[in-house]
Length: 99
Image (cartoon, rainbow, N blue to C red; front, side):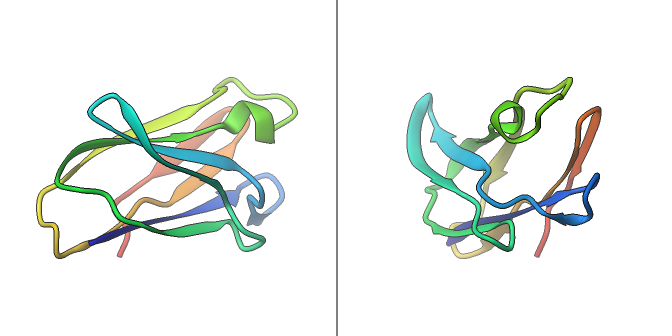
């Protein structure tokens, strides 16, 4: 099983490079990093259960209504890959279960 994300900046139409991201499981941080030049972060190995992926949008965007975006998801099948993309702008965001 692995976890990845891809963050796109809807204002610039470009990848959100250098955005801080952390993965939490059962109240503890299990992984931290920054998106690469293509807005991607991959290779994390979460275990089964409920996780929170926290995007530090306040440090990335000069002005934003959402200083962080938290997406909570459940890992039900440890053999699957879990991809959580984020489309980001100062006053809106969207996410979905990717492939």
